[in-house]
Length: 317
Image (cartoon, rainbow, N blue to C red; front, side):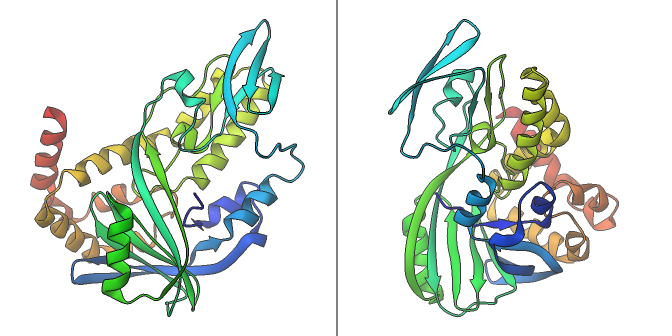
């Protein structure tokens, strides 16, 4: 699937070029039922052409298109990889084969999958703002490429039916193209002595939004270091130390969110609206950073009973 293509500026500090940028985002409107609030932060995110972005990252690589991984087996110091277009031998095998990774099965990582549907739509849109409509277990989103074109999608059960209704109810415009996929969330083993997982295959995504480019690029740097050091298990230790806490805590928050009632979500929404100035100052890619700042707010104390109930549900499920 071609993702929503919304990235924070941190991505461009990790070797990616801005040549693929289509639009600059200065904030977001967050909706829940009939209520909403605005978050403003100049150049907080960028809308990219994902195909151009991937081509830039792949410059200099030897890519065999139309070649599908089938299986592998160890042969002495090498790994024999069987593909749909012949066999290859390598010292290390990296499974960067996306959300439905075949290599992932070797290491036993079992994600939870969330279906995604996205349309490219021509209409009238706020060029500098993303729109986010909260709906369990994720949300609807509108990511503008410009004033006349946007990527509109949802991460929800039965996503096509839900997205069709969303476009019709909001009279959002004419559908130009459609794409679909899944988001894999979870945490588990991502490296052995000879095999490693990377990106979506390793569930290296932000659990609250499903975005994966930032963590995937950071993990790729750690993987390159581990391979140069001839120590592939080092990769697992490095990426977990770097952003493993973000994923673990994000998965906990996701579980709590999915267990909330509509009334509880509404209370948290009002709380976030009251503290929007803190959210505006936070890192686009590190979703846990607001928690430390919010913990010292008096308004946070009113939510303690709610989170205590949610944690109790989580522990005893």
